[in-house]
Image: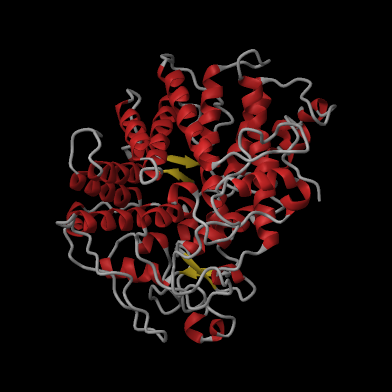
Length: 527
């Protein structure tokens, strides 16, 4: 198979017709050169950006291909590694730490052949001197580039970035340090452009599935992503992290601190919610770690996230079940909790897909305050509790007394009393602790809850901090990742397809990895 991400600005790669139907019939007239765009108008560009957004969260190429790309990237890896869910499908060995080559190939090729290819069209067409030059649209597209590339580099480490889409048969990889440095550069530049716009117009108004072209909200997302990236590199390069975080907070455009500014991707029959689309496949259920934490805390989000089982109880299962263990009645789909009806298959065309929540911003600020950074008025505790407030209200918890009681609760995660004698994941309460070590664990635990169901970010934070404490897997089929250590998978191995399609590029990535191409090798910010 040939590598599919090397072509530059190919309308053969745009593939918008399958998703957006008659809105993009005019692309047929443009597809005269498979490597160049003859012409493109702003109306068409809107729909290219829509495709770049939806494919960027691993939405499928068309409504006829199901939610396969999302499953390959997120549901079969990060969802399981961060223990939001556990699999009940016997043939899914990734919950036993197996790196399934075809799944990795599929996720990689979908991203570079679809999301990145389409976003490249937008960036090339709107850059200075381009036919559709537009600094605002270009800035928004660059913010989105950071958003979709962050989980890619966090999965693998060094990846094709600056040369992706270079039009050649050799695409060298950038180191993760280089990629993160460019994230900061891109977000700083994008925020400056968006800050400079004082008009009321909207950009990509018909194509922007997140904010409908609202520049002020894109500016807040840009600054919030900059804060996220700063916290991510804070252990590896604390000086850079402090500088970038403080700059993000000081930016006049502000951060996403109110739920009204939360970033959600709109779902429709053309862009169905990826997770909801696979919720009735009966291949996963709520994890035991989720049950231990949410039930122990009496967390009102539990019933917002999940449905009770057939007996009316909220139950989760252990990660890493063997095929034989899956036959136990206790591990059946009927006896364990699936997703809540609001994010079920029947609501896949209306349930919005979360991109960035205010709760995350508050919890990032709480950690930044513990680091001693200048991130505004407030304390680590006030930011921490602000994150809880934002998350609970985001999920529809409106009772002020219940919210106050939750924040001061000394309840802790519970043991499950199941056939595996599953212990509590930790003894950490919700009420803000007296020591810095406890406070950091509490921030990490609440961030894990608040990020649900966006597992790639939660998994990156778990690898970086070690929080929340998760349960050992019952089994591992990867000698490099023992079941006893829930953090033993530190990265995803490179796709086998690159060995034949881009061998020099692959070698450049391995050389910059800082270790072997194994699951135990840590990515740069975690070394």
